[in-house]
Figure 1 (cartoon, one colour):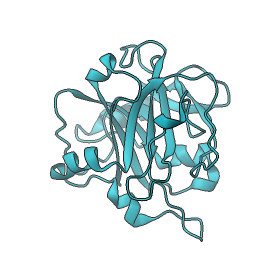
Figure 2 (cartoon, one colour; figure 1 turned 90 degrees about the horizontal axis):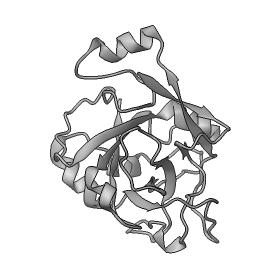
Figure 3 (cartoon, one colour; figure 1 turned 90 degrees about the vertical axis):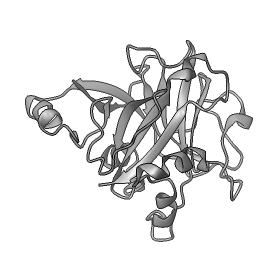
Length: 220
């Protein structure tokens, strides 16, 4: 099994942080309450997994509403707004607008905005084989997994089961530590939680700007 490692070299799998690789500013999602642009957290291309989940030449990008306090920490109440702790909250999270996952054409250059949101430093995604110890830990408990960023596998420490509709597939787990490695000034962005991306299998037939799944954070 593979784990995600960060690189300065673009391997074509995707990136953490940076400005979004959108071709049109109108596609950049905004916070439904404030109107401010959401922060791009993660972009994955069609090459991220052998099983294609987006059309050729397209990608999906995860955007979050991010609010940084004067002391540099992040807004716990806002984190709670896009955090799932009970299965019954799932549909509310999908439709809340505080986290958006969209399908879009893959631009060759990051899109700039005259009024950008908080942006993380960019790091490219690469893969590395898990060590024997990590592999054993991943399979030790059927209800959890290892606490590192990875494609697929088991959601680590998912305290409450998420019974997603059949059309959604667990795509990747992103841990706070890797976000902080990519962008050290943004330690604690997930409030010491893990981010989980579920992709809509119907995104393979989607068009520019369509919703492509959902992303939520659960505290460990």
